[in-house]
Image 1: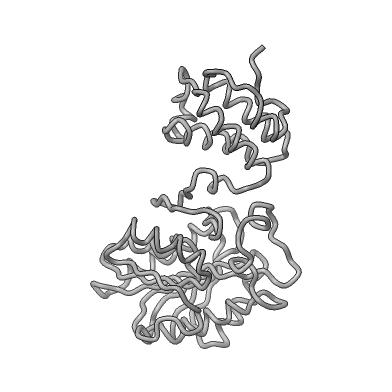
Image 2: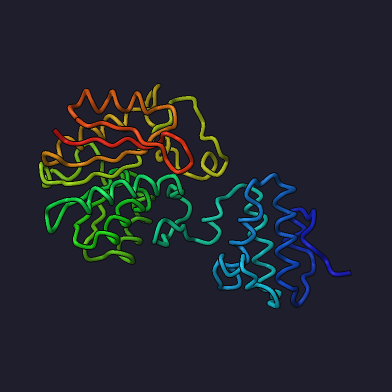
Length: 307
């Protein structure tokens, strides 16, 4: 009888005999069952990504039947077993594939860097709109707390006449950002390892747009998902004090220092934090402060204008 992935333990998946090949459709269905048994809420989507990655096709091709008629070799089945075991431990799917899709980008990610997620695409969208609206033929933008570089590189690639800078405090996260900057936008985007508080003094009063997704979780409030709590570095989600706003306050003050009159700020924050973020920005002198509902119906981003 051909062994399957169904109800296998991690040890079973790694040690039992593996057939020479198996139909991709059969493997896909069993990946879904394994992940559902482990209470992974995105089992079908994860299975699509795993199958696509290992077969070297796109997720859309899998969804449209592109895996039909294909088979997994024994070596590929070993990779399937490894990926299923790791995903059941709630390791982010992006760690398995080594990449995160963000707007038009494919970013390299892995252990040591915050995995950019879909909700941050809305921050990038608002920052890009502001950057495209700048009258300068060569506007300047910065990404504060850039992580893997998602916001900065989206601005740099979608507004190629802009010059974009990003700063990340954590050395491990910066290493991933540097790799992405060198691969995706080596000519108009520049990463720096340092503290937001004193970043880019040479740009004081010159920046047109600031995009940012700073850490904002308060003391004692763990991330909502195991993928973040267990795998993303705490420096990327812990906001630094009881209300989680220490880094947000620093970003606000740095933005005032860097921005030219009329510069735009777009900042991501928690879904219940918009009133607090607005009060912080107002106290620092920002004007035209507005919170925005993202495509999922949650108030996750606040924008403001430099006085």
